[in-house]
Image (cartoon, rainbow over all chains, first blue to last red; front, top):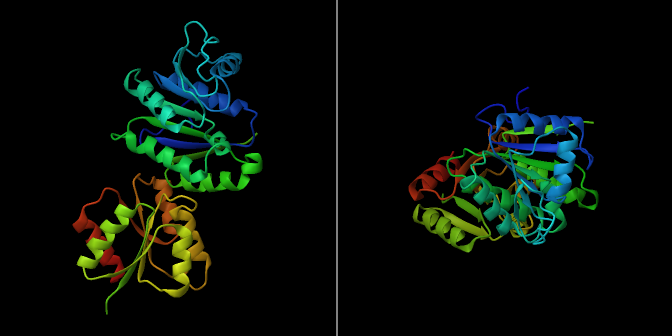
Length: 184
Length: 123
């Protein structure tokens, strides 16, 4: 199966809309497919520590060897890092500059060709939608040759942040090559 | 008759740059540092064209444009966007739906900026 949201080589940026926090088979199928297509994947964990994510991915038979995680949740506590896991830690999930630096490192030093942000909507807890849009713009414009694929995962109705969430989706829509809604 | 252009951008140096280019090109300008200020100014002014920065605090260019289109008094205004990032093909379709006539990517060439504004403002 082709990578369902970025299968076209011209498509560089996908906005993946999830109904809620529970990840469905459709979501994991998308990650599995990306894993088969891309050599190195930078997976930015904005909602859960990378250890939880690895457990979830492995439970779905997704091999994590290709992944370089950017863990924004575990802080500087690196005691839980699993042997053989590649992970870059940032101090806090709202440290957008730190996340940008970590992603840049994963792309330039580790050769990642796809960056997944799971979930970009989590940043609404800490930042206003315009700051998040600016952050995503920076990620797009930092990639001057436009070669790195980016997947922004977004919870469609982010609880009390519903209004901000809608604003964010509407703004990101203007820059996304593909918008995928995963229906349960 | 001299055409009036409204410049909406939160970055003062961009406002100054666009203002200088447009005034040297024979336009009058009105400036706003954000969406709310722009919408307030539009209650009393009717510019020939509004240049909206896409990324602004509190209200994005898209939101300002949406409010312009939803107000019977301003819905017919000509709007162009200025942005640092490229719009996707999907995004370009959305711009058409919002009746955005052009988009200019920052940093821009001054002559190109003036020519594109002229083309739309004088249409």
